[in-house]
Image (cartoon, rainbow over all chains, first blue to last red; front, side, top):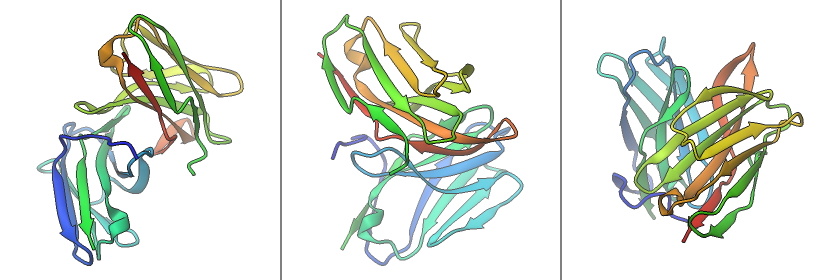
Length: 109
Length: 116
């Protein structure tokens, strides 16, 4: 596969651990936030979203937390698996969808 | 498979040349977005079309242009290419509800452009 970036923050975890990926967003007017996963050689794939009137949303093995006071977003992945290894992007939506720079998650078996 | 198709997957060309990247959105999606992904800039929004009309513009250079055709496929034209234009170019499409984007974009697998 092709690398999507060589200068990304990297989080290395063991299989079965919980992972937390953090993101700071820039626009206090953004009202919708999304986490995307990008595997090597593929396009970004939607994981979970949250609207600004919420502070937590849960999916299957994933939870997104939103702290509007400090403009911070986090993605929690429970029981991380090797297949979760990818680059994770947060994105904020105001008039357009703006992506953060991404975090690489490496999961060791 | 997201349902968004991009061609070509890989393209190698020389500086000064012009290329066209093509995107077919998911069936029924009216919005098409183009993003550029380079190693040091992450995913940069270029431009959005909705049902044939330009909806939003991001950091798109004047050397770049795009259009969306009546069948909803889109093309991104890159001209007078420079070494720094080497990147992955992604197309995405989305569902519009009442004219507003729901936020979930479906991405194609990208076109890797290498300018030598």
